[in-house]
Length: 193
Image 1 (cartoon, rainbow, N blue to C red):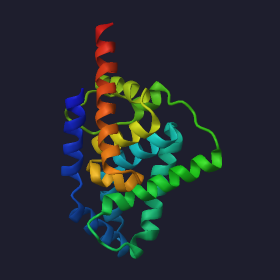
Image 2: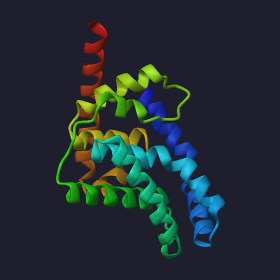
Image 3: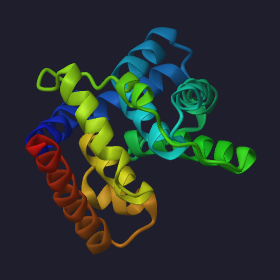
Image 4: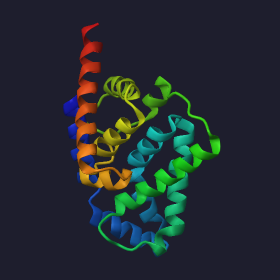
């Protein structure tokens, strides 16, 4: 299962090269709905996964994901290409998710069905794997889950995650590796039963 997370991270990075995403954002700024649809297709799992890791509620995460792309449509003309298009997109999603948390002032536990609904498009991940992985991720702390999701699902590098979460790089690295060890222990414990 840990190998699956690594494979997912590589797939996410390969599917979303910054140059292509920046070109799509440029097209969106020019009013191209096709480019918005393509950006959505390429990044929806990452945006939804990030929102879900914050909100722990599938319906609210879906709302934030939709709101993110509405905001991208409105903000694309002011975007300045710097090679960090995915970070820009995820910052919008994070800010919307945090705003929703502040306004709701409550956090719900994530149900198994909601984790199952988090459909990661990967040839190496079956529905059963997704269910097991979702249950294991739910047992991590919020910060650990954010780091794992940002790396494995969104394809961000550890340095980008450190900047994104405003943490020191060694902190991100240690929490990521600690989270993987926790996941391995959880998964091996579940396999032994």
